Length: 347
Image 1 (cartoon, one colour):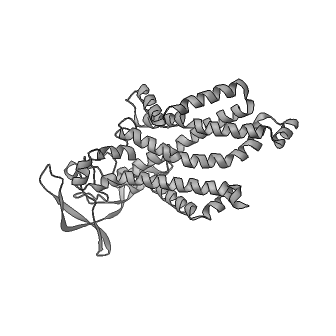
Image 2: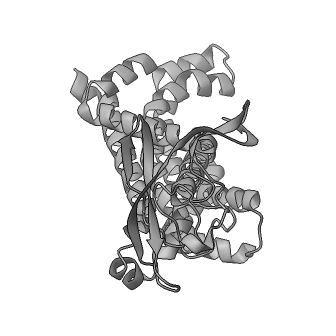
Image 3: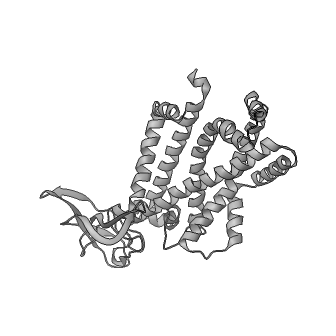
C-alpha cells in the first residue's frame, strides 16, 4: 500500500517538487553542526548588521570579499578590493552529526582576522547563516514532533469514542466541541501565559510541542470518530468479532489500514500550522528563548520594519522566506497525497 502510494505521489509534479524541497530543507538543517561555520551565540559586535559577503573564484580557490564599516553607530559597509580565501574542513570543537556520528571539523570557515559571513549578521554580530540553520532544526522538528503526538492523541480518543459510543463518546465530543470553539492562537496564548516564562531551551521546546498537541488533536479526533463509527458496523469487523479477535487486534488489522490514508494526509496538512504557531509564539517573545534560536525568534528582530527597509537589511527577512517555502512544500505534499489516496482518481 505504501509503495503504491509513494509511486502515485511521485507521478505528479506537486509530489516531486514537494519531496525535493522537504528533503533539501530537512537535510540541510540536520547537517547544521557541520554546515554552520560559527556557534549561534558567537558575537562580533564590531560587525553588527554586516551584509552578506560576495564570493569570487580566482587562483584556483573560492574567496570572499571584505568590507570597511563607517564610524559607529552607523551600519553602513563599503566593499573593498581585498579578498580572503575560504577555508575548508576547519577544525572545531567535537560534535556529533545526526546525534551519533562523531566529528571535529566544520565544512568551511573564514579567516580569524576577518570572519566569513555568508548571509550577513544580526544586531549582535552573530552569523546569520549559522542561526538560520540551527533555527530551522527547531522550527521544522517542532512541526513533526507536535503532529506525531497530535495524531496519537486524536486517533486514540476518536477510535475509542467511535467504537464504544455511549457516555464516553458524549463526553469526548463535547470536550472536542468546546476546544474547537476557542480560536487556536488565543488558546495557545492562554495556555502559555498560565505556565510561566522562565524555562531552559529544552523545556521551552517540550512545552511548545505539548501546547501544540493540546490544541491540534480535536479535529483529528472528530474525523476519526466518524470513520470508526461507520466501520464498526461493517461486515468484516463483525466477522472479526465473531471469530473472537480482541479489540486491539480489530483496531490494528481493520481500523488502522482504513484510517492510514486520512491520518497521513491530515498530518501533512497540520505541520505547516504548527510551524506557524511556533513562529508566532517566538515572534511574540513567549516561545523559544535565547540562547537557542528558531525562525520565529529570528523574525522578532525585524519588528522595526523602518530600520529593515531603510537600511536595506533584507537578509533579516530570510527566516520568513524559509517558513514560506516550508509551508508551500507541505501544502503541495498534502494536496498530492490527497489526490494519491482518492479512489475516484484511480479507477
